[in-house]
Image (cartoon, rainbow, N blue to C red):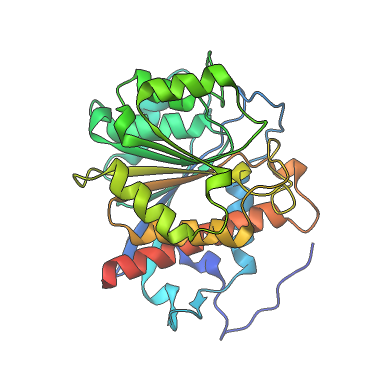
Length: 301
């Protein structure tokens, strides 16, 4: 492991974490939900949440494009990682962790089971008043209980199909029956082929307007396997031809800008499968920072 040199004039992004909110900076809550037990693709129990936090040491807090320092504008309040995230009482325990937590929220998965758990815990009995946008190569509406079923579970629990948009669906990664199931929900699906040549900021803005015309809170699932496998080798189900690293970063910042986005997760990373250069978890860490940068534009708009 390479040790980073200390430099008082170069603040590492890991310094954004604080045990509790302080001063007048925008607060962003962070919680780890390291689900893995029901994954359709066997994976290790190594925590991506821990790895992503560690990867923040590789980046600074300075936003060159905005000419500002993130550390002067936001702070991350770390809510810790949920124990036994695949347990039967996970939603109830997560509700207690998130009770009173400042918004917006960043969820560090875990596989996509974390999406179901986090949105159910946030929404409580009001799931029908929330919206969901997924950036994912997969529909996640499979039968059974697994990381391949969170969208189906959420719809069956009360999420309205018209408040659901799924973006980045890949060819040869889904099935006809499951595509028909999503069509029956009345949801909007934007396949990978429809994204080529498009601005990801425009795609995010359109999706937010579609699922939340009334200003309802939006949960965004950023499943990292929507990206090209070359940039996310630590995502077991990623395929060649997905989104670029830059597109994921643009998506993350655009989500941060929209005040309707109350929560975003980063899921489907297995650190044990990552390359030695840690490119997957490092990209995930950048997505966190891009989201936070977008939040600063939200608050300054």
